[in-house]
Length: 534
Image (cartoon, rainbow, N blue to C red; front, side, top):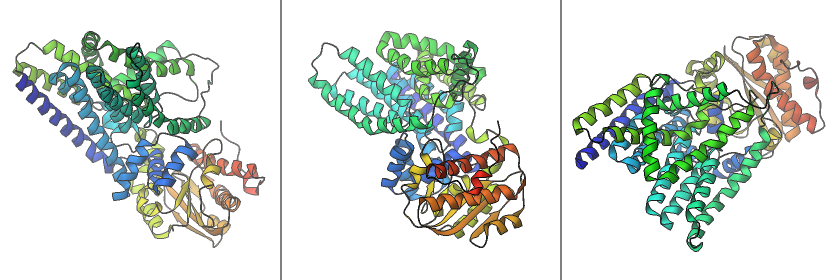
């Protein structure tokens, strides 16, 4: 019986990985490129010292996914390679969910966890997104798996490995800090009364988090929680709805949430009986985002279900443990049929649940499609030089990454993000390059060329305006003034602009003007800016 369950579990694991790979592979080249993916690709493609400086010091943020993307882009500097990195992490998440379920309640539980993870809407959509979400699911699963292993073995070596996995999760996403701190609290509670010498190696592992925590302090400068309606609390309905959407996205859809919720309830009973400290850990991990949800109200910063993807390993493991508990005494053939039914149910509702950032908004979809980027991509390959400076992390720059990776890219943002980016530029700069969205806008191209003069090279398509303003530009002020000149000429040449397009142009323009004002400059282009829309 045990051998049969092992074979059944491994067969289900292979089926789960094959299913997920089949779902993800077409989306690698099919999904529109997203500006967030451009940030990852253009930063990760730079030399390692500059990349780490940009992530940890300039922007502030988790470095692990950038490091993984950097390695992938060394072999193939393309948006597809960036996305395949996420695919690899998504498949690794399924493997780790299997191992976690196996540790909790055997191979049947592991097989169920793997199938539910593979048919998860959230993993299916974010598994090709060139950001850290698939990597975060992977490192969260690794941290959960290694912590459960440490609870079983109770050795210093197992504890050190678990601590390293928790540090990795914290270095992948800011919410990973919750995993690290919760593990530390639970470990201290379990360790009380024992000699401290054996815990010293684990404590030393925590020192690895120091540079990451410093980076997160820099990251906090860029974001704040605001409440637009004056209410400090979210409505109970809003909090419940968010939790529902998160679990539905993890489970595969709203239609199957009740079924999987019942299985998870039985799985919770299994974990309480076998390793209650593990359940306490994940209760502590989930608490801070829940509190944040309550205090953030309807403010300017809102949680998205994808930020909670780290809950996926625990949720699917509980489902697997519950399934194993309910079917453990049934004949192996019946178990196999029920396991197949779980996989089929998850796959049937796979498209319902969490939202894909690349499908949010018609404008973003139109700007990121392959046909919209083909013209700017070819033009950039023919014109961009290594000594150029690219402004904004734009999808056209990501599409031409094999060329644009050799130039420096800086981006706008709140605070001193743009000035900090300009500090790492080697001057003089040969040219500044911008890719501005113009989908649905009316632009007088001839007037723009006249205003920019012979020093500008222009590529105009229905979706994008790409401008290369030739220098050289000797310092930061000259670069900013050149950028302001391009923005000003573009604004004057736009005859009609949809509000969403206008906002996408105004935001980076405002960042340039703010940086110039901080340096004591107020060029005519900045004084003539249109008022911000509210």
